[in-house]
Image (cartoon, rainbow, N blue to C red; front, side):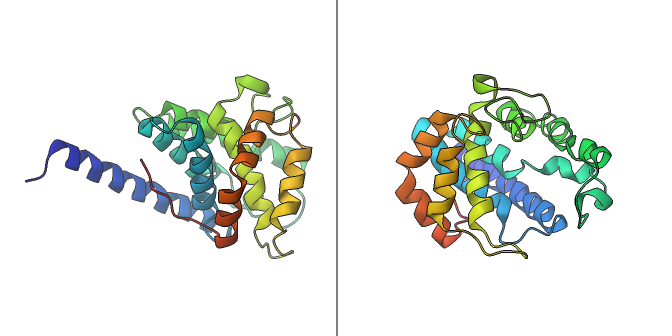
Length: 212
């Protein structure tokens, strides 16, 4: 006989699979390869576990926020999203609306405010030069600050049509260099503490995580 706890776990598992499928569809539309969204979600979750080992609900929301960070790009026209050359200023203005569009989608999901805030804030920079709101420092949600480090790590170490992925140590050096500018120094320090795990996950292109 299935207990209430079993039913809840099955529901969470089903919802997570649906979110992962949606993230894969978003990656596919943008011609991302290698399950970018799932990788950054798994890696961000690993960092978050160091902070919140006993808060499975918060960890689940951080995973969802990282996984669906680009969901707002559903609302960006293909002519802009898939443009081969540089974007014009007016095109960039449209592109920069994707975090808010994503927030509008995610905020409709009950009890997912933390995830929605990560989606809204994933393009912010620690020094306040990001978008869409120009948040700085602690005004940026902690999950989004963790995600920022991981997103850069994955972007630099993954193969692209125009270049091969860089070595972990090169990405690490760039992340350290941008501490206090693009990244929260505390998030960078947490990344450095978790380096052995991060290095292994990157080498395996890990896209599998144990979701709380």
